[in-house]
Amino acid sequence: MEWIKPKGLWISGFFLLMMFLFTRGFYHPFFVLLIGLFLIIVFFKEENRLFGWMIISFFLGNLLLGYMDTFIESFHLSPFLLIMMSQLLLLIPILMISFVVKQFNQEITPYFHRPNFTEEIQLPFKIVFSFRRFVLIFGLIAVLFLGITLQFQKDGLHWLPFLLILLFALVNAIFDEILWRGILLPKLIRHTNQPIGIVITSIAFGINTTMFGFSAMICMIYIFLGFMLAFLTVKAQSVFPAMIAHTYVTTILLLNEVMTIPVYYGS
Image (cartoon, rainbow, N blue to C red; front, side, top):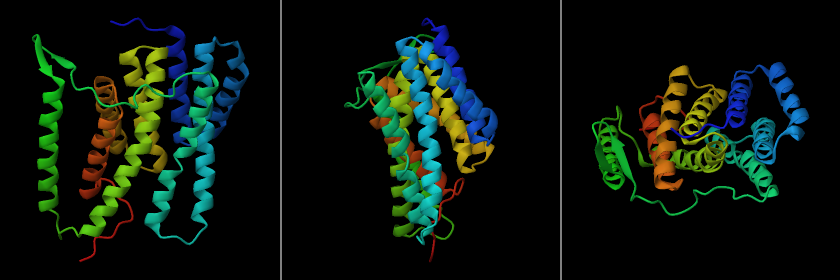
């Protein structure tokens, strides 16, 4: 088992606690912790100080995102356009965290490269499975399942609503993966270890969905999805396969109305 860095683990737990308080609307204790982090961050060593500033910029970016989202809602725009603009606002925390990382002269992410499918997956009973074959099999299953889903739509699905769903899923996946698997995951791995980094980002990713009013079931789905996407990113050493997988899962959830966005299924 990889060695766990205790201070990194403590800061990661602090991040999870702040995430829970922030998404559930417990703003008084959240701001107490945020101000406390401001006060003690000067005593951290450089690596932990970087991660502390990343946490601060993440939440400040999300606060600014919330205010901008409210401001945009004051315009008379279509519901779909509003939700798309809300997705684009994810650039705010992404840019703020990226700025902090660059101030410490570090690479923003090591995962903006071509995927590497030469890795192998170790299964129980000493079974070694090719990662390339794993991706191929699941890709074929995904295409088949999407085809079946489209075939059994209740009233049929017109091409325009489907394209709008696909557009939303793609934009959401790109920005989510840049933030969670592209930037936060490698930093958490560096400050704890690989298994802990995957666990922390996956739980935080799932909790973050509750900020948008999704149910506990959706939260659990996204925690599990976070595990799978983090595993895929680490194995491929690239965030691009996770973007594709995330787009697919969101599309399936929307087509089956497990989640909804303002797209009309007119006849």
